[in-house]
Image (cartoon, rainbow, N blue to C red; front, side):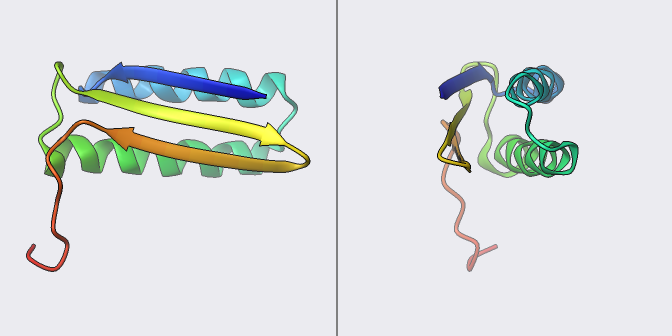
Amino acid sequence: MLIRLIVPGEEERVEDLNASLEAVLTRHRIDPGLRGDVRLIVEELASNAITHGGADAQAELSVRLTIAGGLLDLEFRDDGAPVDPLGA
């Protein structure tokens, strides 16, 4: 199973993204603890992209989720400016 969720890079839309993730993970019978971990990871990545990467309504936040063979693979992408963690 492969799903891709895309929302504008606005803080208000992070909750929409997490609600969609919750629905997909629940539908595929993913353990509640793991669902919470996935939502927390995505929320932190999205918040950091918006706060530090300058993502905005014109930028996209994208989550690609693959569930196959008992494994869950999560890819997060954003259109914001790159951040140099060593220079911060």
